[in-house]
Length: 626
Ligand code: SPV
Ligand code: MN
Image 1 (tube, helix red, strand yellow):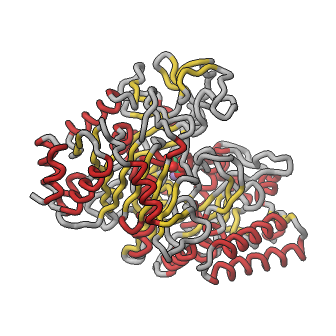
Image 2 (cartoon, helix red, strand yellow):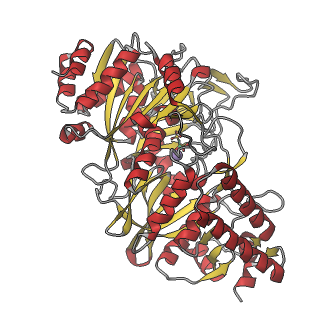
Image 3 (cartoon, protein in one colour):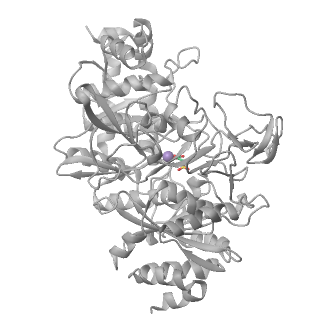
């Protein structure tokens, strides 16, 4: 028996002891022993992913009060996060950097020793009177070059239960891996709890990333983006691992797009949180492979990708029978689902934009709720939080892609990048080449903050490749990695820029949410070289005739020339403004920016200026199609 197992034995039942001892890796025992020493749980439960263990986790989530059964539907439960714990917390999420090391200025960081002392101080004895649950997970399909193993110690049954729905189980992978010591570690505690089982001390919320130890600490929070270790927490560690090993870990959806003749082409898509990623991945008639995190590798010189996860933690706001048939059907039928931060009344869940009137009272994340109730900040509390969510396994969806667990992943035909850009970029465009796409669309991705993170909404910002919140390496290095990745491929995916949020002069969106389906179909045709495009200073845009046909075929809509011109007019001043902001951002925040970024932006500026000299500030797409 190694000394760590010996130290852990008093906290373990005989069965749990055996489960742990069966893993031939003292590093794992050491990690758990270290966290046991810190958190001092009364006992430790080791989840082996057996049916029995998983059922136990599910039962405990309800027995502990962290979830409540929704009585009208078998398998449905609801979980509430505290009023000040309704999204990812950027301010309290920090990288711990050793003395002498600095990350890019734009990244939230602090001295490693200080940070460790602070967070470990907050976690001291935090599990007294509780059980520490140990979960083993495989990030990505098992038995694959993509597989990364992860382990989490948590005192939240809700977190442990969510992991069942969202990830591939990993206990047997740890057994197989034996002494292989490369795994990501997360330790989490919900901290002191209120009577309603929500974290009681939001001012002591901390999410600290210790790259040196491949460990993430999370305390005094339950919101899944801050607590479910294998979501955004391990993602930060994976980005670092990818950097060393020469692949990419991305905030991307994966989907199969159906083209002519029964063809299916896989696309990845990077969007910041709450900018249309999940709704794109779920387009009806296409297949969904993933909606949040993907790993990309060059295999035999083509880009292949896997979904790191196997479930969806999706925004429920605006899911309604008309716009989101597939997920709406899942959410309104029996099956295992955790709803979070919705309104519950008479044993039924309600959310904003569900397509029917909401009750005037019920129970929500603030406890007993009634219309007009004011929150901690004096603002009126909505019936359900905007960032209310559902957690469900991907396989619950009718159009789950059959390649989900393919260890080789899927070959990517295209990659799209899109943010909330109300002013500049056209709704869809294709880059000139890989490097232009990476710089002009991915590294230049502009967006506005959303309810997915705590703080003010609608603040414009640059969100590099949509991983600004998760990037754990120098930012310039990330740009370089992306450039290099594509340059080395024999067949690189085509890069597209999409913008679902462009507005007109009166502040109205120029597109409806359904239009994205047409853009996706157009991208598929471009990947296969089946339609022409119009060359503009910012990229190739669709021809009117092709869109008219696609609007009819896909949405049964008559697409007018006026709409086309409005949507695809090149707005020179706004585009020059964008370039200026992006350039300044990199100059001021990213000391290791590759020169190529400035070069590609310079050329884009020159093309825009030249076009302006001939055609003026606002240029109809028809001018470029002469
Ligand atoms: C996001 O905010 O990007 C999400 C939800 O996907 S969470 O992972 O909880 O942050
Ligand atoms: Mn996300």
